[in-house]
Length: 258
Image (cartoon, rainbow, N blue to C red; front, side):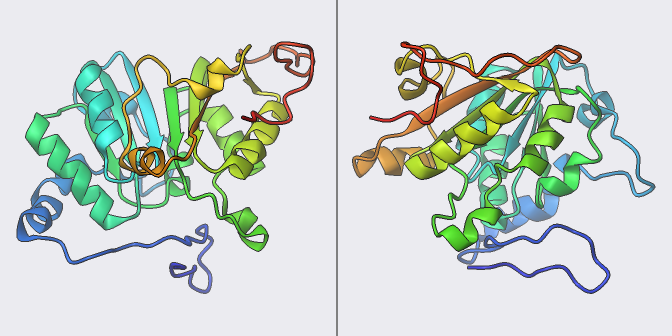
Protein backbone atom coordinates (compact mmCIF):
# COMPACT_ATOMS: atom_id res chain seq x y z
CA UNK A 1 0.00 0.00 0.00
CA UNK A 2 1.37 3.38 -0.97
CA UNK A 3 0.90 6.37 1.25
CA UNK A 4 0.06 9.83 0.02
CA UNK A 5 2.79 11.73 -1.75
CA UNK A 6 3.80 15.34 -1.19
CA UNK A 7 1.47 18.11 -2.17
CA UNK A 8 2.45 20.74 -4.78
CA UNK A 9 5.22 22.90 -3.37
CA UNK A 10 5.92 20.40 -0.59
CA UNK A 11 9.51 19.11 -0.56
CA UNK A 12 8.84 16.44 2.07
CA UNK A 13 10.13 12.97 1.17
CA UNK A 14 7.46 10.69 -0.19
CA UNK A 15 6.06 8.09 2.20
CA UNK A 16 5.07 4.71 0.75
CA UNK A 17 3.97 2.72 3.79
CA UNK A 18 0.68 2.49 5.64
CA UNK A 19 -0.31 5.22 8.08
CA UNK A 20 -3.15 3.32 9.76
CA UNK A 21 -4.34 -0.24 10.21
CA UNK A 22 -7.34 -1.64 12.06
CA UNK A 23 -9.47 0.61 14.22
CA UNK A 24 -7.82 1.18 17.58
CA UNK A 25 -9.45 0.22 20.85
CA UNK A 26 -10.60 3.04 23.10
CA UNK A 27 -7.63 2.66 25.43
CA UNK A 28 -5.14 3.00 22.57
CA UNK A 29 -7.00 6.04 21.24
CA UNK A 30 -6.74 7.63 24.69
CA UNK A 31 -2.99 7.00 24.72
CA UNK A 32 -2.66 8.82 21.39
CA UNK A 33 -4.71 11.70 22.71
CA UNK A 34 -3.23 12.04 26.20
CA UNK A 35 0.26 10.49 26.30
CA UNK A 36 1.63 11.04 22.81
CA UNK A 37 1.62 14.87 23.06
CA UNK A 38 3.84 14.61 26.17
CA UNK A 39 6.37 12.36 24.42
CA UNK A 40 6.29 13.77 20.89
CA UNK A 41 9.50 15.19 19.42
CA UNK A 42 8.93 18.08 17.04
CA UNK A 43 11.53 19.81 14.85
CA UNK A 44 11.86 23.51 15.76
CA UNK A 45 9.39 25.57 13.76
CA UNK A 46 12.08 28.13 13.04
CA UNK A 47 14.50 25.48 11.82
CA UNK A 48 17.77 24.77 13.56
CA UNK A 49 18.70 21.81 15.72
CA UNK A 50 17.09 20.24 18.77
CA UNK A 51 18.73 20.32 22.18
CA UNK A 52 18.65 16.61 23.04
CA UNK A 53 19.07 17.24 26.76
CA UNK A 54 15.97 19.43 26.69
CA UNK A 55 14.06 16.80 24.71
CA UNK A 56 14.32 14.37 27.63
CA UNK A 57 13.84 16.93 30.42
CA UNK A 58 16.46 15.16 32.50
CA UNK A 59 20.04 14.01 32.37
CA UNK A 60 20.73 11.08 30.06
CA UNK A 61 24.10 9.49 29.42
CA UNK A 62 23.44 8.91 25.72
CA UNK A 63 20.72 9.19 23.08
CA UNK A 64 19.76 6.34 20.75
CA UNK A 65 17.55 6.38 17.67
CA UNK A 66 15.27 3.67 16.27
CA UNK A 67 14.01 4.15 12.73
CA UNK A 68 10.70 2.37 12.21
CA UNK A 69 10.02 0.77 15.61
CA UNK A 70 7.00 -1.28 14.50
CA UNK A 71 4.89 -2.10 17.55
CA UNK A 72 7.61 -0.81 19.88
CA UNK A 73 8.55 -4.01 21.70
CA UNK A 74 12.28 -3.72 20.93
CA UNK A 75 12.47 -0.02 21.75
CA UNK A 76 10.59 -0.47 25.02
CA UNK A 77 12.85 -3.36 26.05
CA UNK A 78 15.97 -1.29 25.31
CA UNK A 79 14.50 1.59 27.34
CA UNK A 80 13.86 -0.71 30.31
CA UNK A 81 17.35 -2.20 30.09
CA UNK A 82 19.06 1.20 29.75
CA UNK A 83 17.10 3.66 31.93
CA UNK A 84 19.83 6.30 31.72
CA UNK A 85 19.79 6.33 27.90
CA UNK A 86 17.24 8.48 26.09
CA UNK A 87 15.68 6.72 23.10
CA UNK A 88 13.91 8.47 20.23
CA UNK A 89 11.67 6.22 18.15
CA UNK A 90 10.43 7.17 14.69
CA UNK A 91 7.31 5.52 13.27
CA UNK A 92 4.64 6.83 10.91
CA UNK A 93 2.28 3.86 11.37
CA UNK A 94 -0.17 5.11 13.98
CA UNK A 95 -1.12 1.64 15.23
CA UNK A 96 2.56 1.00 15.94
CA UNK A 97 2.85 4.30 17.80
CA UNK A 98 -0.12 3.28 19.95
CA UNK A 99 1.61 -0.03 20.65
CA UNK A 100 4.75 1.70 21.91
CA UNK A 101 2.68 4.06 24.04
CA UNK A 102 1.09 1.04 25.72
CA UNK A 103 4.58 -0.32 26.53
CA UNK A 104 5.62 3.09 27.88
CA UNK A 105 2.60 3.28 30.16
CA UNK A 106 2.87 -0.31 31.38
CA UNK A 107 6.60 0.03 32.09
CA UNK A 108 6.45 3.61 33.36
CA UNK A 109 9.24 4.42 30.93
CA UNK A 110 10.46 8.00 31.24
CA UNK A 111 13.34 7.80 28.74
CA UNK A 112 11.31 7.37 25.53
CA UNK A 113 10.38 10.06 23.01
CA UNK A 114 8.45 9.60 19.78
CA UNK A 115 8.51 11.16 16.33
CA UNK A 116 5.28 9.94 14.77
CA UNK A 117 6.20 10.56 11.16
CA UNK A 118 8.81 9.67 8.54
CA UNK A 119 12.21 9.58 10.29
CA UNK A 120 13.81 11.51 7.45
CA UNK A 121 11.79 14.56 8.47
CA UNK A 122 13.52 14.57 11.84
CA UNK A 123 17.09 14.10 10.66
CA UNK A 124 17.78 17.75 9.83
CA UNK A 125 16.63 18.78 13.31
CA UNK A 126 19.03 16.45 15.14
CA UNK A 127 22.49 17.76 16.10
CA UNK A 128 25.74 16.54 14.63
CA UNK A 129 27.31 13.60 16.48
CA UNK A 130 24.48 13.45 18.99
CA UNK A 131 23.37 9.81 18.60
CA UNK A 132 25.22 6.93 20.26
CA UNK A 133 23.37 4.06 18.58
CA UNK A 134 20.88 3.72 15.73
CA UNK A 135 18.60 0.80 14.91
CA UNK A 136 17.08 -0.09 11.52
CA UNK A 137 15.38 -3.41 12.23
CA UNK A 138 13.32 -5.41 9.76
CA UNK A 139 12.40 -2.41 7.66
CA UNK A 140 10.35 -3.00 4.52
CA UNK A 141 12.66 -4.70 1.97
CA UNK A 142 10.57 -3.53 -1.00
CA UNK A 143 11.45 -6.74 -2.85
CA UNK A 144 10.34 -5.73 -6.35
CA UNK A 145 13.22 -4.22 -8.30
CA UNK A 146 11.19 -1.21 -9.38
CA UNK A 147 10.62 -0.39 -5.69
CA UNK A 148 14.25 -0.63 -4.54
CA UNK A 149 14.56 3.15 -4.44
CA UNK A 150 12.06 3.11 -1.57
CA UNK A 151 14.41 1.17 0.69
CA UNK A 152 15.59 3.06 3.74
CA UNK A 153 19.22 2.09 3.24
CA UNK A 154 20.38 4.56 0.60
CA UNK A 155 23.36 6.88 0.11
CA UNK A 156 21.27 9.86 1.24
CA UNK A 157 20.10 8.24 4.46
CA UNK A 158 23.56 6.86 5.20
CA UNK A 159 24.98 10.36 4.79
CA UNK A 160 22.40 11.60 7.29
CA UNK A 161 23.17 8.85 9.79
CA UNK A 162 26.89 9.49 9.39
CA UNK A 163 26.30 13.09 10.45
CA UNK A 164 24.07 12.16 13.38
CA UNK A 165 26.14 9.34 14.87
CA UNK A 166 28.97 9.94 17.30
CA UNK A 167 32.43 8.65 16.49
CA UNK A 168 32.44 4.95 17.32
CA UNK A 169 28.64 4.80 17.49
CA UNK A 170 26.89 1.64 16.37
CA UNK A 171 24.41 1.23 13.53
CA UNK A 172 22.39 -1.98 13.81
CA UNK A 173 20.51 -3.46 10.88
CA UNK A 174 18.52 -6.70 10.83
CA UNK A 175 16.44 -8.44 8.19
CA UNK A 176 15.21 -11.84 7.07
CA UNK A 177 15.29 -10.76 3.41
CA UNK A 178 18.66 -11.88 2.07
CA UNK A 179 18.68 -9.70 -1.03
CA UNK A 180 18.06 -6.62 1.14
CA UNK A 181 20.84 -7.79 3.47
CA UNK A 182 23.25 -7.93 0.53
CA UNK A 183 22.01 -4.52 -0.68
CA UNK A 184 22.63 -3.02 2.76
CA UNK A 185 26.02 -4.62 3.25
CA UNK A 186 27.28 -3.43 -0.11
CA UNK A 187 26.15 0.14 0.47
CA UNK A 188 27.21 0.58 4.08
CA UNK A 189 30.66 -0.95 3.60
CA UNK A 190 31.15 1.30 0.57
CA UNK A 191 30.37 4.40 2.64
CA UNK A 192 33.53 6.08 3.99
CA UNK A 193 31.96 6.85 7.37
CA UNK A 194 31.23 3.23 8.34
CA UNK A 195 33.20 0.10 9.12
CA UNK A 196 31.96 -3.47 9.51
CA UNK A 197 33.77 -5.21 12.38
CA UNK A 198 32.53 -8.74 11.58
CA UNK A 199 35.21 -11.42 11.29
CA UNK A 200 33.27 -14.69 11.07
CA UNK A 201 29.81 -15.72 9.95
CA UNK A 202 28.73 -15.95 13.59
CA UNK A 203 29.04 -12.17 13.75
CA UNK A 204 26.06 -11.75 11.45
CA UNK A 205 24.05 -14.88 12.24
CA UNK A 206 24.14 -14.47 16.03
CA UNK A 207 22.20 -11.73 17.78
CA UNK A 208 24.07 -9.09 19.77
CA UNK A 209 24.16 -9.91 23.49
CA UNK A 210 21.75 -7.11 24.41
CA UNK A 211 19.29 -7.93 21.62
CA UNK A 212 15.52 -7.94 22.17
CA UNK A 213 13.33 -9.80 19.73
CA UNK A 214 10.94 -7.81 17.57
CA UNK A 215 7.45 -9.02 16.69
CA UNK A 216 8.35 -9.27 13.01
CA UNK A 217 11.51 -11.20 13.83
CA UNK A 218 9.51 -13.72 15.88
CA UNK A 219 7.15 -14.27 12.96
CA UNK A 220 10.06 -14.72 10.55
CA UNK A 221 11.77 -17.25 12.80
CA UNK A 222 8.45 -19.01 13.36
CA UNK A 223 8.09 -19.68 9.65
CA UNK A 224 11.65 -20.96 9.44
CA UNK A 225 13.29 -17.89 7.92
CA UNK A 226 16.89 -17.02 8.71
CA UNK A 227 17.59 -13.59 10.15
CA UNK A 228 20.81 -11.65 9.70
CA UNK A 229 22.11 -9.12 12.22
CA UNK A 230 24.60 -6.55 10.94
CA UNK A 231 26.53 -4.16 13.18
CA UNK A 232 28.43 -1.22 11.72
CA UNK A 233 30.58 1.38 13.48
CA UNK A 234 30.84 5.08 12.74
CA UNK A 235 34.48 5.77 11.88
CA UNK A 236 36.17 8.63 13.76
CA UNK A 237 35.74 11.90 11.95
CA UNK A 238 38.83 12.91 10.04
CA UNK A 239 40.11 9.35 9.77
CA UNK A 240 41.22 8.14 6.37
CA UNK A 241 39.41 5.33 4.60
CA UNK A 242 40.57 1.77 5.05
CA UNK A 243 40.94 -1.10 2.55
CA UNK A 244 37.83 -3.19 1.85
CA UNK A 245 36.74 -5.29 4.79
CA UNK A 246 37.60 -8.99 4.67
CA UNK A 247 36.05 -11.96 6.44
CA UNK A 248 37.86 -15.18 7.41
CA UNK A 249 39.84 -15.89 4.27
CA UNK A 250 40.55 -12.51 2.72
CA UNK A 251 37.53 -12.21 0.43
CA UNK A 252 35.65 -8.92 0.27
CA UNK A 253 32.19 -9.08 1.85
CA UNK A 254 29.86 -9.37 -1.12
CA UNK A 255 27.16 -10.79 1.17
CA UNK A 256 26.62 -13.03 4.16
CA UNK A 257 25.32 -16.32 2.83
CA UNK A 258 24.16 -19.48 4.46
